[in-house]
Image (cartoon, rainbow, N blue to C red; front, side, top):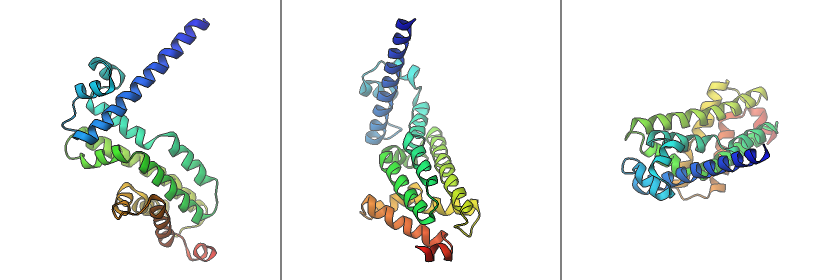
Length: 208
């Protein structure tokens, strides 16, 4: 029984490594060649696996781009960031942590997020993956919005608060400030300040 368990564990680990290698290869090719010009055969070659392995491990291009989108918005860092936000009852600190965490996540997954949004009109599968990535991102921001509202820190409801958070911490906001040549740290500090100015009520502003 122990031997079978060990064998099963080894196989699961190998399958996970193969899956990760395929996604890494796909991401690099999507960035280099674009989604349309990248083939599943090319992904298999870059990952060093058989063509059939790509299909059995992940799937075709639509499944691959969806898996990459999920990886970019549902990794462990996202959960850690949400936990950190809920650890503080200081509204300004909530926004600072939100800026830092969304910046770190955007930086970590910048390549695939760019592929998704730049190629959304090229293929329905990419558009669907991009839409789902945005939904998952905004769902996380809504949790933060609910926290701010529960603290009595904002003068807007949850929906409006989430929209303001998306305006300042969404992918387009990060792309804009980074396009100015600002560092990640400077970008995070500025976005947090602007979000605080827009969201926090007079009492919260005076307490800073």
